[in-house]
Image (cartoon, rainbow, N blue to C red; front, side, top):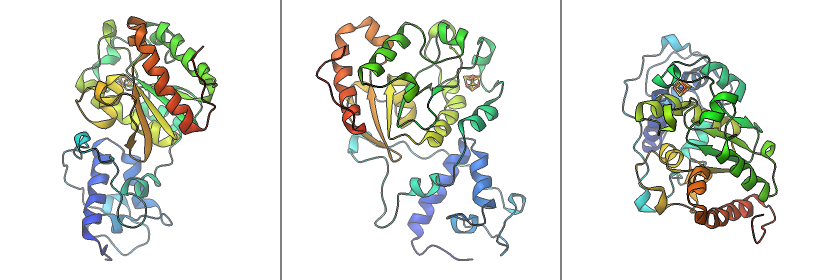
Length: 288
Ligand code: SF4
């Protein structure tokens, strides 16, 4: 069996694959064993013994030992989350090429989900809305009462403010994609609990990998902390670009926070101007 000359890179790649499996991304695992012409093959990704056949059946592979997910990035270091190797693409870029799910496939996989206790009190699953090929994705926390009733994200008061912000950027809602960390409304609009985030966030990661946006804007602490796997306060990072697995990610305040603290709108507008510049949109002096 051929081996990578760079064993350290091989080990990192294996950790990344285990991380995906721990997230429940079985299709990812199947892809890498079943793709005969793909850039990455099972035998080159793992140290398990496999037959010499060009197509390896999943059932013939020993099941990898479960390990804890990869450690969260050390934000204090100031280093980007994606560590590039000395040559070639980042490890994430190499693996993400294998994922080619559509949003419809991910929604179908979610089904009438009962993976966490939020299913008991929801009326509607709020999967996401917008352009499946958007360059800009907004990620919020979870649906509220209006969203739960309509099945669409950000349609209540906070949603109207987000729509105004998008239009102030010179875009339409249909130009961007909007989704949340959890797809079902937490009772009383409380924050999602860790087990709920753990159950639902793999679907968010898959949505992002399907859309492959140029920019991800995290609306509020829950989105920021979930994507980066950190418990750090968003206030230290608001308005700063973070290299999130090869995507440009920028955390800012949630529109619901702006409804309670209108003075913070100016900060958010500054953040959105950075996004506009990154996307090549005309930067205006003031929001309407
Ligand atoms: S919040 Fe997510 S994981 Fe929980 S029941 Fe709803 S769709 Fe499923």
